Amino acid sequence: MKKIYNEKKFYKELFDKLLPINRCLIGEGYNKSLDILDEYINFNYIKIKSGTKVFDWTVPMEWKLNKAYIKDSNGNKILDVDKNFLHIMGYSRPVKCQLNLKELKSKLFSLPKLPKAIPYRTTYYKNDWGFNLSEIDKKKLKNDRYDILIDSKFKKGNLVLGEKILKGKSSKFFLISTYLCHPNMANNEIGGPLALIGLFQKIQEYKNRNLNYIFLVNPETIGSICYLKKKFKFFKSKKLYGGMVLTCIGGPGNKLTFKNRKIKIH
Image (cartoon, rainbow, N blue to C red; front, side):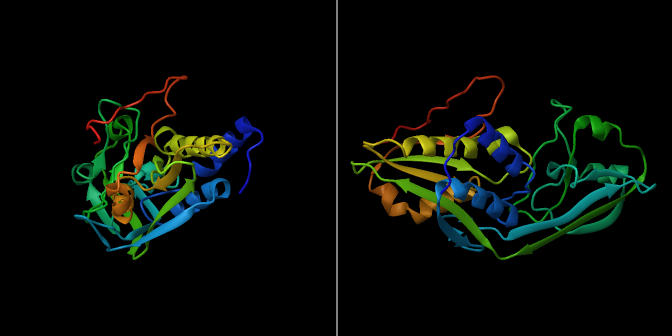
């Protein structure tokens, strides 16, 4: 397990490693990213197979994207995931077809209120496909015939959770979790894991820890549900003293926000 010596340099270099990796719920990109974090935390990996029933959810298949683009009639790529992974709707099924502009627009997603932003849209649990782009670029599209290609595959895989427990003197636990499944997102997806590493490095140095600390990295929503299922007896035992989810903490300036729970824990 590596130690951090120059924090500023470390976080910059780790950020640069994680940002270019194409991640989703299950697959090579997520696993590679988790392995990078594992060098500093030494996780216990918990694996749940595709198709596993988790309460009223089901763990999805692994999705692998080889390439995806849209070309105009002159052969120019107007959208290409090689330039930005956000351009593809996550978990899109394989497609090879030609559409006119009207037909194509039903498969294009943008945010009119944020005209420069590329939205992140997925279709984890529906057999569908689509592309994401900025509203500005969407308005530039001309009346044309467009070639669409999505080279993707689905196969059975494993949803992977990274868990690390630092023991304390008491029987109470504090859970610190974060997500690692979105591509090309600094604030939403990389800020949390980097903060998790920083907290782990600090808390492991505490000589007289009272609480036990659980550090958890998982794919959003389905990963949390899988962890709840796996640790159902633990959560029912009321040993959990509290917890926090580290997400969207790389916002503007030095401002951090805290969102309190909506329900009272008894």
